[in-house]
Length: 301
Image (cartoon, rainbow, N blue to C red; front, side):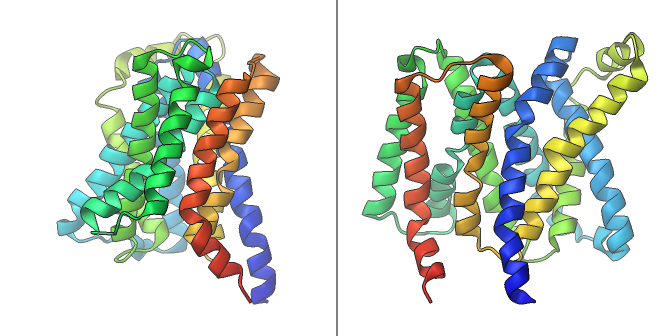
């Protein structure tokens, strides 16, 4: 039984990475309709919050109980992480090729390492410094030098998504010591949704729905966006983590930028240059290097 469960864990995480990697299709479609990055974020996190709230209600109603002292923690998870990194990532998708945006998002393990040193007092050893060097070199190649015309603003926005994404792991580690993954995910998205309505120009967003040729079809596409880019991958990843340790899961999840690159090539006729491809490989190498020891240890008989 346990062996069977373990076998499905990596598959679930690969599934999550593939769904996350398809995000560019939905973001660019909604952008073409006229929604801003902030409005697309609001649509995604608000509908995801609805899905997750219903799921928690069905699974465990007591999971809605949280201590008042933990409100700042969930505020940080919702506002400082999910909302911030999603706005940055969705904006980056509109400013650069999907491969570049996705790989800049996946500098998150580097930022997790630095924040762990700062907040958890972890040691910064030679392997970690080498990973930092590889990631920095990769970012340079993925940026303007790659010939893709990425601006400094675009590069900073992409790196911002990685920082925000990394913050989720730091704050989430603390939250998961006190609450179930379903409670953490639900409240994270509820706070993110609340914050998104402060920046999305709600009146303009509602008018775009009301003026659409087929509002019902548009609303259905928005539900599909939340389902494919948030609900399914977050659930799959959470369930996968029951049998796959976080370090292995992080390596497996790097399939996301590779999927995003393929999506960019197949759906948007984007081209992957040799230099930008080398940059992607350098950053992925840094991510794998950071987790290699633990993953190798885990696989030992």
